Image 1 (cartoon, rainbow, N blue to C red):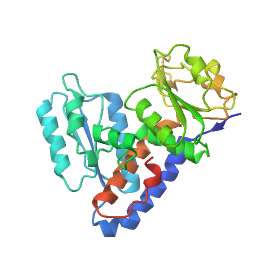
Image 2 (cartoon, one colour):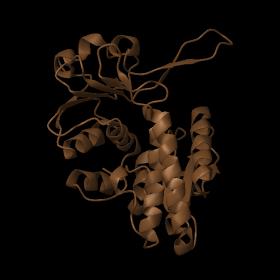
Image 3 (spheres, helix red, strand yellow):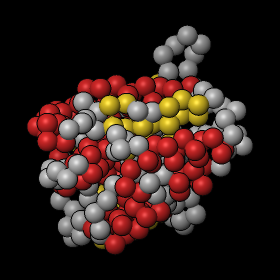
Length: 298
């Protein structure tokens, strides 16, 4: 039976560490860390995500400085809000919650966020820093995967890693982080011919394809470590509790993998935790404090 890489357990442990980091440096900093999650419109899923992030902030001592704008807010006003947060010395991290309402182009708005306050680690400058191995905020989901692998004792140096998915959000930065850890990395995607032939070579297989239950036993080498980044809501009967699944057919893969992340409870909790890590790390830098979180920013 595969070892389960438990994201909930690790996220809780990291929150305790972050709470200590903030408490021990609060007097020297003179103010708590501040995170601004900017939400535009009333997308129900976004509402849940933002509420979870705000609760996590309150648990570790981060001040919530975000804003919720109506769906009909013009792009110029959203941009003005971002510029105000950029200039606010109490704000250490800014996150623009996606998706945006129809008619708002996320590109210019994301580009307007001060790279030093980029809590999501997705600004062009910060992706460039990752590529060059320079310090800076890291993309939350792949950085969370790296923390899970480290906590699970998964050795990466010299290993063959395959990432399924090539998005800027997960796949591309994931491949760069694995490569920086001295793994030999390949990227597969929807156009890859004979994907199973590629994925069966992986000692570490990270699946971020965004397609429910895409990867099964035929894709996995026995003894591989399998990380499932996907999360999807399955159709359910009216009134029944919705069930979730990932990109991996867990029941098929768990018996042959050496370690695997569950869905839910694997990568998901780590994404929120790394958002907090980016914010606290920025706070330490901006307040001239030591940097106690470098091991979590691959």
